[in-house]
Length: 118
Image (cartoon, rainbow, N blue to C red; front, side, top):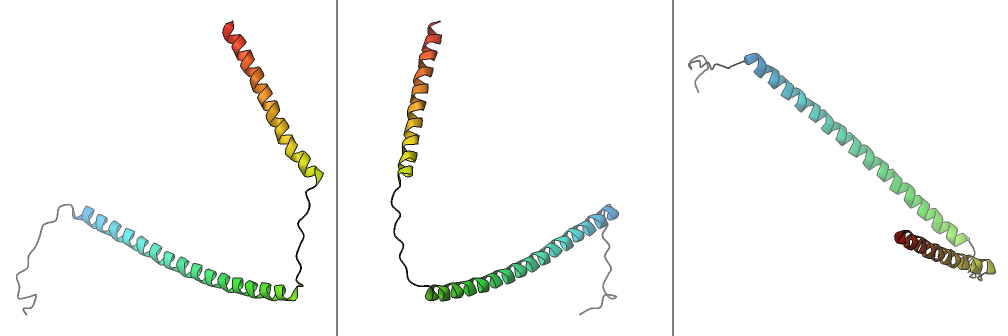
C-alpha cells in the first residue's frame, strides 16, 4: 500500500460549498431527530409491554379470586319472573303510536292533494 503522501493529491471543485455544507448539516440534524424519535418509540413500547404484563397479572389474580368466591357461595337457581300486566301495557303503547302516525300521514296526504287541486 502506498502512503497518502506518495499519491498525487486530487482537488475537486464544489460549486456553492456553503450551501452544500448547510444542506449536509440540515440532513444530519434530521437524521438525529429521527433517531431520537426511534429511541422514544422503543421506550414507549417497553413501557406499554410492562403495563400490559402488569395488567395480565392483575387479571389472573381477579380470575382466581372470582373462582374462590364462586366456590364459597351457595348454589342457587333463580326463577324467571312472570310477565306483569305493566309490561303488556307498554307493548300496546307502540301500536297506538303507530296508528297515530298512520292517521297523521293520511291527513297530510289529503291536505297535499287539496293543495295540488288549488
